[in-house]
Length: 93
Image (cartoon, one colour):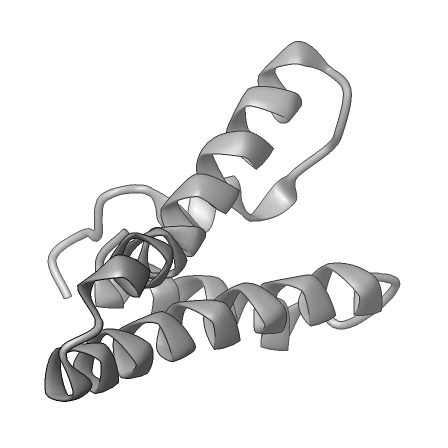
């Protein structure tokens, strides 16, 4: 996911607060894991701990993995996901 897509997702949740508190909280947790992954990656590079870098790299991919899982569940009809439209390629902004 691009930074623009992350921002679009966060904005979508801000503009659709009714009945989506759990989904917005889950989105916040995903974004926290993403930020923690990048921070941890830098810290691991400084302290020379390469054995933990795969965990950190996985955390940096959390938003993409989350969006892919939600897209898959939405297309299978298991889970409704209204915010997928917000992740489409940005129009001329």
